Image (cartoon, rainbow, N blue to C red; front, side, top):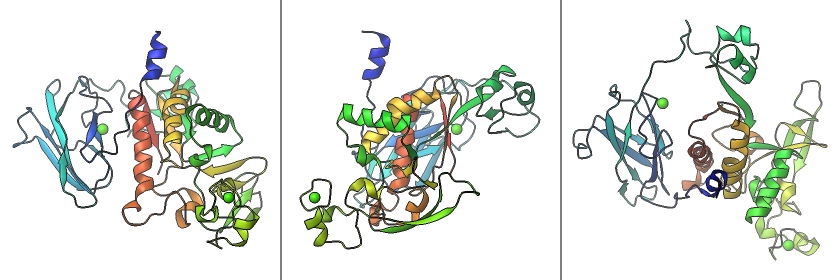
Length: 356
Ligand SMILES: [Ca+2]
Ligand SMILES: [Ca+2]
């Protein structure tokens, strides 16, 4: 078996259904021995979390007197170290306790370790670290910036970080990405339509036509909503009989794909849609296919349009996949974090960053 084949067989374990924090990662690796960040990130997977307490100790039995401990009310299972300066090349131990949302108590993880291996920064600028997005001229970039979208900037100074511009919460259709996602879903038994978000009720939307440009006209259209209750026989469409006597008169989509949530501009020929970032098929496609492809030859990826709630007009609308009620209120943000974590676990050496 070739190394490539072996790599492709590694599947990221989906353990988010456990009430006990599992799959612990420090800087996205298990028990890493050469952490290069003096303030490492800690990450874990848990089915439900209202708060957590994370502790770092200098010995496996040293948690009565931890080096650092933090308690935070948060549904997100990630935190960055913010304690006293850690000693280089010493081994530390960490564990996390998570309180579940339903008040069923606190669950404690197993203990993991990490070891710092810090070296001085390769380059100093006289200013704060500087990011200029489309700055590719190597001579210009060399003395001025640290990070940009153009890998040719590295010809002037090799440690300039080049990140590829990409999108994760939205997708243009048709496109190569849409074709690749369709093929991935067919190959692995996922329903492509589950990868999109859908309006739960008919919704007025105003967008530019053709592209999001000031000179393009803005047009208001009514997007039909999808309610599974209207599709009584569950065949994925609402036929004439079902439509005449539909349970929800405020959702008039005859097919689910008609209820996709548009963003930025109206087609045709191309539409842009809000994705269902929590869908397992979409998450696997992004982590296994898209992110490795986009990061290849770059230091990482910059994802544009990553808001803390459903993107675009979806934020203030009723959305089938994100009802935002009760414990579901912050699920979009948790799903985005889970999706980014899967990409980082697969590509721990790549910088993966986003706006919003
Ligand atoms: Ca850090
Ligand atoms: Ca039907």
